[in-house]
Length: 447
Image 1 (tube, one colour):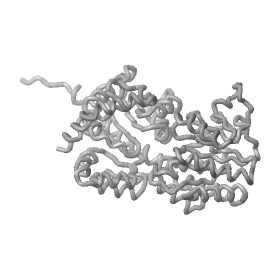
Image 2 (cartoon, one colour; image 1 turned 180 degrees about the vertical axis):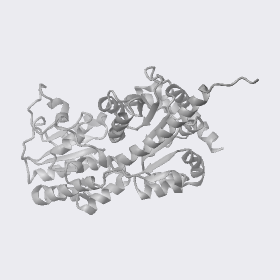
Image 3 (cartoon, rainbow, N blue to C red; image 1 turned 90 degrees about the vertical axis):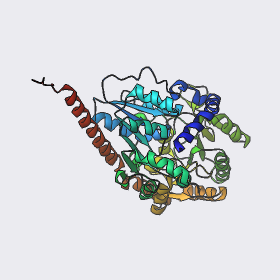
Image 4 (tube, helix red, strand yellow; image 1 turned 120 degrees about the vertical axis):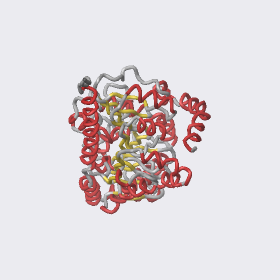
């Protein structure tokens, strides 16, 4: 019954979904693929195809080492990575060129997912975190395609919604259809079992984001020099920020300038299309501001030294964190749930964040316990912490080292995840070999 209700609701809201997609420039591209008309480039060619789904840039970054390792171990397989956003597509094409092909993920309409599955014919479906799309998972299960959730997590808000009895009943069969649920933490494992997943399919493997390799020197396209920042000038970075957070960061920055006028602020809005609005807000505060793209070598503004720089490029935030004196990670001073706290921590930088960390609660707790991260709840606290860490160099170094130690001490999830996927691929190959043998076995004529 609930499945009929779900699909009926999808059909009713289909026109609204289409209007929303058309209204958002970043969603228009790949619209035909979202409705099940897969890219003509991605057609079966005889190789076993593994379909991995990542939502956007952050998830693609997280699974990049995984895809690279799977490609190394299984060179005869074909890998397709689907995303829902354009930033995700760009990341796949840049980071996984020659190893994986990109596809915009189908909306969970029955006809869209069935057409996509028929086009791809995957032998395995892997998705990161908790992208539980009922029609997609049901169709795959009906066709005998194993599905694996990796880096699974359930925020408190998601868990509360899914625990509602009618929803829980609906999702129970969806969860039972999955071959493996590889969860980030004991809390996540307990929650997915509570919602109906088979306990035998649930494993705690950890968070693969701890296993992200640091970019090499050859990959460093942006440095203090390219941004016109003096080597000894304090650099504050606000990464993956949202509205309101940028205003709060600028307010704290203005207070810091009164004592340390050489300080610079770099803002990296979570959604790049907001750059113009952020720039206008900063100018309204009377600060000299420039976009990263306007400071590129050879541009008219090359060599300009603004007080505030807005990062309007994709894929560079993780690199520029290396240059930070102190890093603040966004989505935490507003009720979003937090973004990647590990990117600055990996470089050995002190990490500040707000009270809203439900999407990264375990990482935030580990950083605070180790002394590598601190929570701020207001502009006043943010200003106080920034000033303290700028002025107390020894403490700043110790805090950065503690943050980096948290990253190193919690690595290993990638290996566990690869081995779990390897086991499923081996099982699939055994099944395929058995089927081929049965079809090729000679039939003896009766006498």
